[in-house]
Amino acid sequence: MKCLRQYERIKLKHYKLEQNTEFLRICLIYNVLPKFIRYKPYNTRFKRTRKYQELGRSMLYNIYTEQLKRLKKLNNDVTENGSCIKNIVSYPIMTEIVIYIDKLIHKEKEIIHDRHNRKFQALNIPVNQAEESLLSKGWKYAINLNKFNNLNLKVDIEYMYYFMDKNLLLKNTDNANKVKAALDDFGSKLKKKVDEDIPNLSSEELNAISTLLNEYSLVISKVDKGNVVVVMNKSDYLFKANEILNDKRAFKNLTII
Image (cartoon, rainbow, N blue to C red; front, top):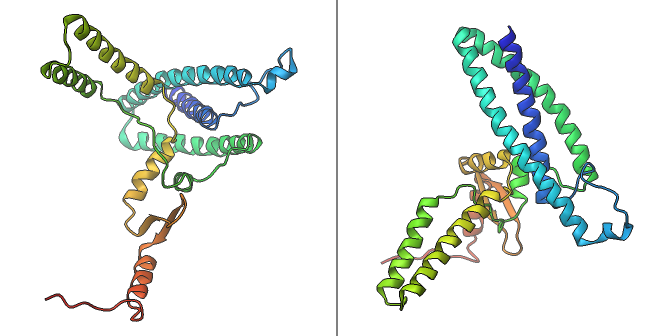
């Protein structure tokens, strides 16, 4: 019983922390400062400066990274506790436990979402459903790189150095060492930049990408002008396309010989 209560407590704590981290991520993406970050400077004019915004953003980013570390640790605790309970109870009981905890999380989810929606409205951040939010970003929206293959980069850098050396672009040893050091430094800096980058899509929006890719009943396209995404039922799309193509005044059948 004690193990179950601990698992329940950790799961709820994990969910709350996950939602709080997501709130901070959105604040960073939209470059807004929540109330708990804002502070009253001695000079009121300083509040209108760029330095004030940068300082606040730096504080927010530090909190965000700390939350991510806590979330990772808590995720391990959830896995360990879940494994512990699975070893103690039977499968049917474990299923009931999961359903019970899911109900608690769902109840907590409604409370947190309502609270965060009020915060977003106060901060003038648009809030939409995952798929709507994803599509509303526009056709030219670029998704941040989530995974970084350091090995591939090292191979590319080594090949670049080999190519330069082979074509006698490195005239002496001193230059060769400098170029090699610069290339290695570039690789390290790029990896650090990617690791520190804030994802510009939430986990729900990333899942929405897979959902939309596998939704064959929809046609997702762009308009002729602008950066707008259009979503149509495939049946409506085909009907409209056939209607246009069947217009004898605009099109005619060609016989291929």
